[in-house]
Length: 343
Ligand code: AHM
Ligand code: MG
Image 1 (cartoon, rainbow, N blue to C red):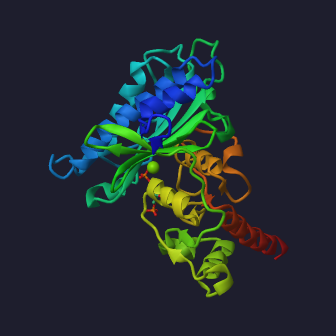
Image 2: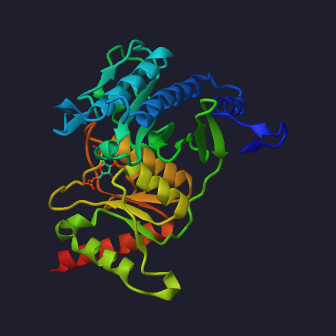
């Protein structure tokens, strides 16, 4: 996007400073934090792009706290993001998919807490398919106490002050919100800068793509099975059957949903009774972005952002995307829940 006054492109750095200047009392700390994440994203993007040639591909050899095999790039991304956040001494602690418990940073007086999924979709790393980084930023709940605790960090998604993601796809892009709409920046590798590509993205109210791992069909609730059948039935008025698209990287699937509309689902199932995806560093940040773009995100009961978290790494089912699609799946879930209750 080109600045109309100056007729030139706007970089992430410039955009953040311009946004900050609209709030005369702002300390600039959140702006600095977003710039730090932008810097780490560039370094991770460089490494992702040369992964095949530097022999960084493959497994690191250990398993993370969820028992999943850790890839080398996961660890690299985790280290880069944490050290970028440590630089400016604004963040007191980080909670990351790759670390059990809280990671205390050097500045225990910092007022921000950052949740990270450093490299989401890691099963796609070795096959050259899009992956991403996700971040979610909160103010510390008890800034006056000396000791940092999990309690400081356990806040519902509505308390997020900013959230976003970086998608390492055919190009690298960063999308984020501070609660005033969603801005998207694309990395221009020739100058090493994120350039503003859209400063108020809106998700279509209705879309014709559904995105779910259908291999798990037989372990779903009846309501979801019936909804997916509904997506597949022909009906010209609602442009059905829908198309099925599933990348297996939440960031990529949700970004496509943001742009084209439709729905992304990772449900509860007999295999994953509470869903698979993590509330604090996968579902909350992406729900904040989608809601800010005019969409919706729910679990089986209500808004994802209103879930009161009980633990740092808890999981939740998620139904996220265009308003009309999310309301439709909710109708099916509610209808069949009622039937189970009656039976
Ligand atoms: P990860 O954080 O270990 O990469 O796992 C999360 C990923 C999501 O990006 C994606 O939506 C999901 O796992 C895919 O899971 P599945 O292979 O069960 O469909
Ligand atoms: Mg993940």
